[in-house]
Amino acid sequence: MCPERRACGAGRVGRSAVRYVSTRPTRKPLRQRLRELAHARVSYGYKRLHVLLRREGWMVNHKLVRRLYREEGLTQKRVGPRRRKSATVRMLRPQARVANERWAMDFIHDQLASGEAIRILSVVDVFTRECVALVPCRRCAFTGTTWQGA
Image (cartoon, rainbow, N blue to C red; front, side, top):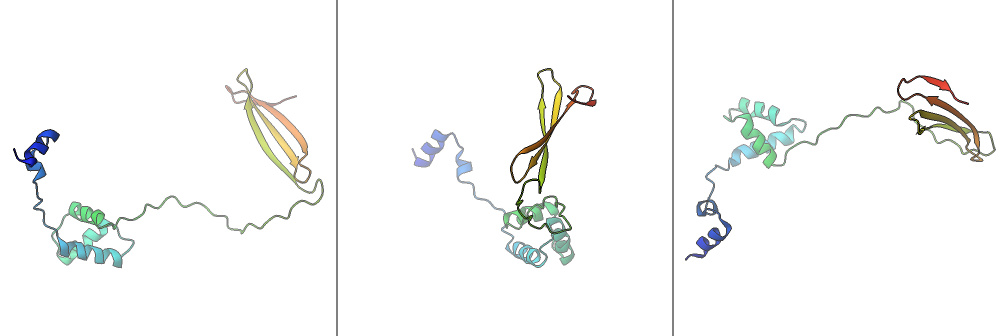
């Protein structure tokens, strides 16, 4: 028994699949022209390049152009959403040198055992790291109403 038959039998693969040789044309001139157009027009995707190829007389459909475009590694990077940037340039703040020169504040959120949400405004002196104020506020999680706490 031939080694190829034994190997195909062991792997349960058809010999025709192992011996298959593609008859698809390489389309080298088309690939070359597609590469040239993509390098000349960097912002164009495969759809716009397909239009240019059709105008030049190449009888190709968009699916073939897309496949060749990807095989040649000409795909573009996806651009994410642009973030808004501040119009003013942020300057470095000088560090606090004495107490009560600058304060920082933030909210602390938590939930009580009864299910009520509680929010606390904390104010901290930046120089001494001392808590200047804690202002609690309870909020009902179900109705959304707010009232000042104790």
